[in-house]
Amino acid sequence: MFERSSPGKHGYQLPPLDVPAVDPAAALGPQNTRSEIADFPEVSEVEAIRHFTRLSTHNYAIDLGLYPLGSCTMKYNPRVNEHVARMEGLAWAHPYQPEALSQGILEIMAALERMLAEITGMDAVTLQPAAGAHGEFTGILMVRAFLASQGHPRKKLLIPDSAHGTNPATATMAGYAVQNIKSNQAGMIDLDVLARAVDEDVAALMLTNPNTLGVFEEQITRIAAVLHSKGAQLYMDGANMNALVGIARPGDFGADVMHLNLHKTFSTPHGGGGPGSGPVAVKKHLIPFLPQPRLARLNDGWSWNHDLPQSIGRVRAFYGNVGMHIRALAYIMAHGGDGLRNATLDAVLNSNYLRVSLKSYYDLPHQAPTLHESVFSDARQAKRGVRTGDIAKRLIDYGFHPYTVSFPLIVPGAMMIEPTETESKAELDLFIDALISIAKEVEETPDLVLTAPHHTRTSRVDEVAAARKPILRWKP
Image 1 (cartoon, one colour):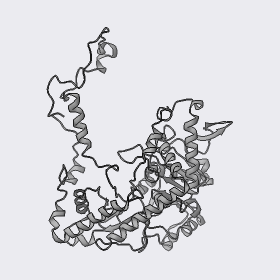
Image 2 (cartoon, rainbow, N blue to C red; image 1 turned 45 degrees about the vertical axis):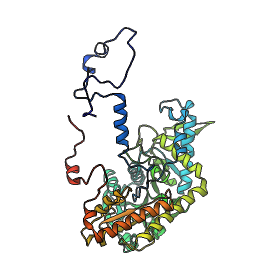
Image 3 (tube, helix red, strand yellow; image 1 turned 30 degrees about the horizontal axis):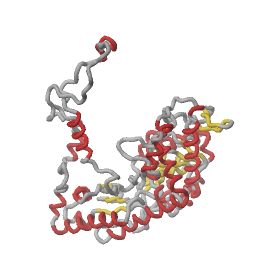
Image 4 (cartoon, rainbow, N blue to C red; image 1 turned 30 degrees about the vertical axis):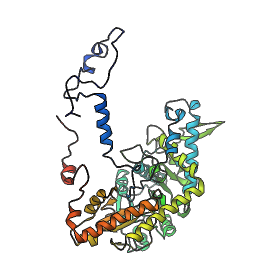
């Protein structure tokens, strides 16, 4: 844009002014106005349009192809969701509207709360949290408030080494110390290790189930019993609910509180810093501590109940990101119960198809059955000097977004892959062929992989310098 700039060019054309001119500086004050922006590019409208259109072709998107990111659950957002969210009466609703003019929006949020409670097997839901990590924080604050109401908020949280990376940060922000619980050889929690760790100072276990290896914690009901016997709570990270919806309900196997990621399980847009949505579902004993206000049925309509003396208070200025709520409700209603179950079964089937197809070419450290995702390692390729990051960069040359690199940390050189239910067998076969081809390249011409990507607009970057000395703007 700067290189195409020429003095005097304009991106607009207007007829001559036919009303008295007003000096902006006189109307707004000179401190609030400027005549021009120093060194700002001067281009025509078509040059501006073409510039940004060209930039858009540099992006990868779910509308272009598979996102195999493990743990992130990047699936297609159906256009019917977008259509509903853009309906005039919904898209233009304002959070300061009177309740009498907001009954449609309130009904949508109440319906979503009911459906999420049913899906999770919990007793109540709040839609306030704006993202998954925000939901974690909200849930742990409720656990703390509940335990404090019993006279002792306790001192620490137990977090497995297979948990999501945000869990320790949440614990620390909520005022708890973190105690790590190591996984066993199968990639699950060792019940004996857990039993020894749970004492009177433990507030809760923050458990991801299925965990970050894609493995379902088979002892989950016994895990919950160990915690409850000592007065501790079971917090479940619901980021991997895409493996459970319609099949199993966390509330039925002992979870006291959990968050959901609408952008993962229920297909609302994901990425770019937001908007997100991280509803929190709780069992009955935690309902008094939910964030306020709460939706309440009043006569023939909906209202807000602020009279909640034990509430942890607001965690969001307004009642969550309503556009995400609308999209999630549209997704749930379009599928219905059988459709949601089928989506889960397809996600698990797709993941296991990838796992079986690739295990002859990439090391699979854990042999336990997996659900919606699986984690390989670069152990075989590392013998040739090629690591997971190199394989991921070479995958870009084949037209695919890379998988999740180097996570979870309990698998050295991790390659974490989650195809979701979105992808067809034809797309999965292309992805499998690409990874098999790269595995063969590592054996025959490792330098080809070590210097990838080769066909992108930007070649391999210095990631350390980019992280430590980021250049966030171009200066003329």
